[in-house]
Length: 194
Image (cartoon, rainbow, N blue to C red; front, side, top):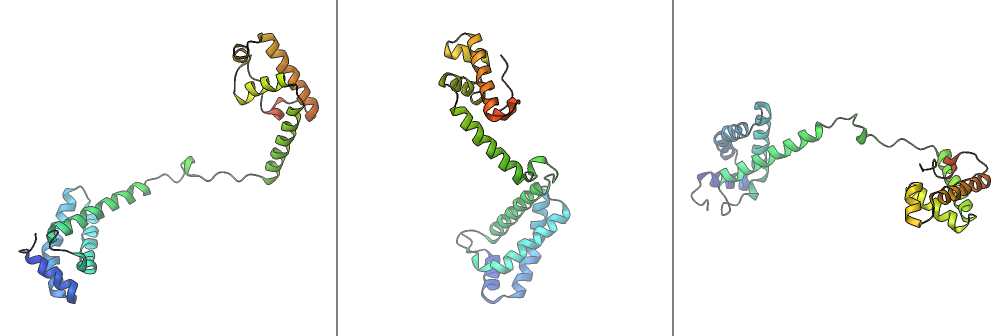
């Protein structure tokens, strides 16, 4: 493909013997063209110069990777320049993240005492639930674990609304006695709306 590319011979000289004169000739020819190419793509002048330097350093270090049968030197170098520009754009996007963004903040440390209390309360609630009659357990499950209102529970179970309310109220009374508390929060949250 690039057998008649005079610059391919220069790249091969850089690869074989680290020929500085060949590299200088490549630099003089391609650096201004790569810089102009990057600026046409919207890269600011300073970044275009830095990226051009990176491309030329890549040429120096990786000249042995150039294959004249696959592309011309120009195609190879411009592809490197384009990829470096894409990398720069990706880095810029990540640097624009707001460090104070709440979703980027670590979760607050939990108090081991509070965790232990919560686990203990959960064990007590589970034990107390097993003491309820099956019809009350089912209604508590529908109200608190399925999030249904009293009316929705009545519709789903076919029970009268008053029966649903009284069974849930009885279940709460029993749970409060078992748990030794007056707060519905101790058994999974406030009572759902009727």
